[in-house]
Length: 171
Image (cartoon, rainbow, N blue to C red; front, side):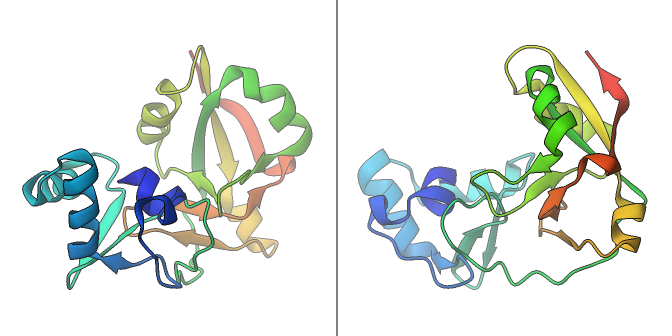
């Protein structure tokens, strides 16, 4: 579902609207015919995914964030908590220390409101990981915008290096 709704809807024969929505019935047809996934399986994924990657409203579904295809999630800028966190592979630290956090092929940098959530993300990376502390209050006060997706993931266009510190944790 993530691949289809975030990265390759056209490969599945689906067309997302401008905000990333597609008919749930159309998604079900594709997933059932191509992958043998039932409607109940899809609902189970939506309801029980710890990362809450999808939103289902009025027979329409979309991924909450992380798209590599062009969508406008119609998010409203909001004031973030004073501190946010980002879990990443330790091998990424040298480039992050030079350039800050970049969205890469996604629409935003993904941030967590707590260290535990950032660790869940970081552990999925290969090798050792680090948890970065983001001074979101300073960023916000200096004009940077933040958004929060339906699943609670905080989003920013980028995080310049001066707002990052590595002291949030290492393993």
